[in-house]
Length: 204
Length: 61
Image (cartoon, rainbow over all chains, first blue to last red; front, side, top):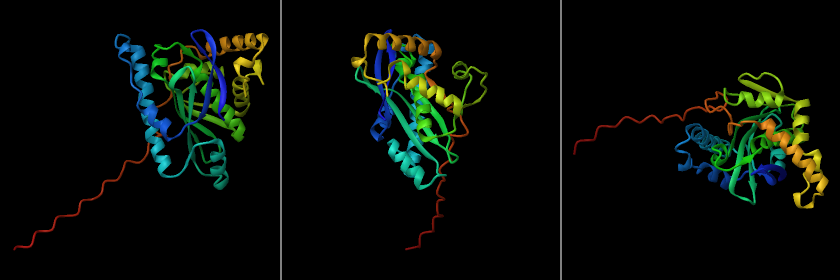
């Protein structure tokens, strides 16, 4: 970390960086607002509002983990926490930034559970992206795949989370199997997802 | 770690473009958020309210 990965902006491949979020980053996403330009587009407006709500919920959870000192701000910090208590539950937030975008493109709140799985609590992209005011693609998928790369690095055997009616089709496309309200990305799939973000098409 | 775009050869760039087309297709109509805001897993105990201590009657002056 930080991890460089490609995303698509206006049809062109551009770079973005994913890293662990800090206190300031979490405060910044908490201030996200739905653009007034979306007032005539109820579906897009609702998606953008969801992104803002998720950012606020993630910040609220973050406060809980911060106060209980179970919050990691870097990969080495997370590894230290795990080695100090292998069965502890720890939380971290990931953020995506780019030099062509002001602020944070997307973020995720992830938990490392007591049995060494990663649980994706919330993953959300900037309201202007989910509201399609900014034409940026693949941020959400790259974040999910990067979480798998992190799981691989930590040797976690599962990445899991809850799927909703809206997000289940997304997970079904990734996992190529039916998904109900709970999804699990198993170790062999973690490897596959991680390899996609650690892009074999253009490795250093 | 991905090589910086500026350092890629033309062949690498075109391979990457193909890879990204595949990812965009795979992402499909991404709703923008993953997770469940009503999840039981993210619920945390409600803060306990402190019991107010009963007011003592003021002593008559």
